[in-house]
View (cartoon, rainbow, N blue to C red):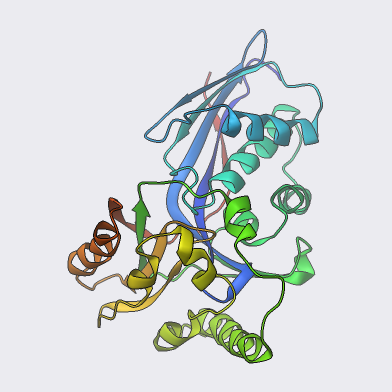
Length: 300
């Protein structure tokens, strides 16, 4: 990498599924992991920010993604400032892997090919929901990484997210292991109805339909056994609440409210659902992110 080519990369957090959109629907959140990159004699990776990894798993994921682009790590100093809670169902793994892919591509002097990045990040994640929401921003409905199988929808500006984050981690692999191998037909019909309504509501801006559209029978009830307080949180009703769901594999909860609505009361109620189950939790009000992966040059 030429000495004058310092650059920065950032990727948003994301919430997947939104209830019935299992492995298909994701939406970007205005909370980012950022990497600043500058030339160096040898490769190095350093972490900072409000959510510093407590073990090597996050770094290993970034490095594995970089090696998909080039087995030889670039001669750069890479400093990652992470604000996305790890292991909380907010797309941290997708964001970290996408940071690695983008830094490796940019360090090679290549024009970032979004289709190529989509292919790699979906292969790493195993599903397109968080992956493509992080890459493209907005809301994404996708069957695969292929552009023809993915529809991006602008992030809703009149809505915002209340992300309620309990103080424990839940690995995606563990959360998936809780799901059954077979489902009743009536549950699959229920799921298809809500998933179809979810896609239509997101595309049309018919927010009054989201409360029904975000119901689910495929995964949330099964994961509730590992997320104390989840069932109570999903049952909360309030006029300010547009829709609510487990965020990704959990344990965080995504509540959608109108941007101009009072939110602290509903946030306290959701935090209390976890507190009553013996789990401290904190609600964060976030905008939805209209932009996904961002790359910009830095002056040397």
